[in-house]
Length: 519
Ligand code: DHE
Image (cartoon, rainbow, N blue to C red; front, side, top):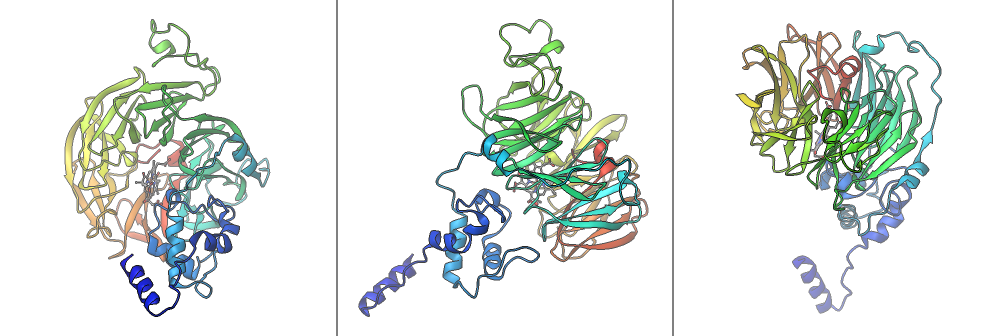
């Protein structure tokens, strides 16, 4: 500001016109709008709005504008634009939209593309165990790799939408997988035929997706607009779109949505209003009365039903405060949701429809990464903390913190397997320890081993093969890799080069709801 004023003053003294600040909206229209949309909401290129760019630093964005993005259609502009113009463009795409357009059923439907009709198959078109495949999301160049979990060899690699986030979701038979991108695209992929089936843009800024118990419906949780969208898993057509608002009409972002296969429903946490929603995926669901649901609370079925029942019957559970991401206890009746101030978990009992306990967990527990196992005759769950160098172990049922395990640094993901004696915790939120993987002995609840797969480079997100034989760890770098360990001897078995592999997901562990993996 001061520099600009001085330049202006000097120009006046010299009798010269001051250099005008670059006209960012004009530059955007000229150079970006064709691919990223006049409205910045994306077209062939991704949306350029702050909500979709949360994981991209401004310096990175400037370098992409200058030199382009490898393996995409994005060209470099440094021969056409000066530094000040690039900086102005970056500032522009990080500024909030003055007007957020509506993105309702009509717009969603208009974006839908069906690319292939899946052929009738009783096995994959390639030789590998379809239940021991891994889907690996590579965010470095926006691709996904399908990996044979026995031979540890890639089967295919294909481009994905820009910035996939969250776990892909699988149909119960493991044939189809669904991905979501931060800017709202949902992609259905045929794992047996290795082809994209359909795509639709279900939101402008999306949190995550969930698949129903019967594999017939996809729920999409959105930040922008404030909606929870139900799609047909067959062809991604819209079945229903809920405007997300509390009873008083206050609208809200959706923190996350997950399948509850025990209750045959979707559970969604709302970020801005103190409600938790349960949306039935049972076509025969009975009517919903107030805060309580049908037969589990006889005597409370009075008055006019809030929802007539059937598919997508919606029940509201009123809480004291809004919840962020959450974890299902293995009974799928209790959930542990993170309070928004990151100081505790709130336990909600879905049968009785209310919060039943608070667990003090300062340091921002990352409950979505929680996993469970049996310990001393009871079930415990473990959660990392995004802002604390420890893992908390909580006894399920009495909701007591039974151990706080000190680690080398704050972590993000945690994984185990029924066949493994260790829980694998990364420390990717820590500058000093980001290259470590800490193995917690599930019996002694102590750090038993510290691995350093690539010194100095971030190691994160472990996933096991279906038998618990191998543990696959990501080296979270552009020139990264999957490091495969023998899960028992901890010897390195193989290193598979990948472009910033983020999450990897084993079909069997996912469709069987392994206690060691996220849902
Ligand atoms: Fe994630 C899962 C929210 C930042 C990588 N992340 C999830 C899920 C939620 C969530 C609700 C569960 C979705 C599911 O699997 O269905 N993530 C958030 C945030 O609120 C947060 C902290 C801020 C934000 O930017 O939105 C956040 N997440 C990140 C990252 O910075 C990560 C490390 C890199 C990235 O790609 O953005 C990241 N999140 C992931 C991954 C999963 C995930 C890899 C799936 C984990 C799994 O094993 O299932």
